[in-house]
Image 1 (cartoon, helix red, strand yellow):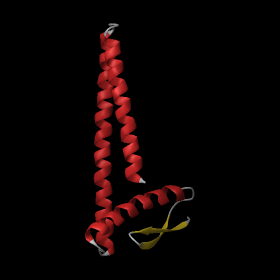
Image 2 (cartoon, one colour):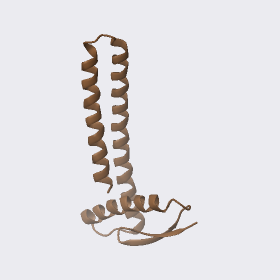
Image 3 (tube, helix red, strand yellow):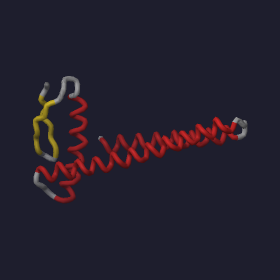
Length: 119
């Protein structure tokens, strides 16, 4: 099991991970570090445990919001697919396709938001 040195909120930690998971652990540590740095910029230096707890909660809140957005998008897509299958009418297909196009644009915007907030 490899040991990695990571930094979160200007503090160094040595953590173990399975072989092959190093890049994933570094990426997760970078997300946590970014949240910890935001928190410390707002509040000032915090005790280690409190800093890690608050940064983790901030990330969990963001993840929950993104998961909710994803679920709403999936529900809208399923509804569009249902309407498209149900309609069978040629005139309804363009309307459903427009809706699917809008959904695709929203999914792309969500992906960009996830990338910019995460990195």
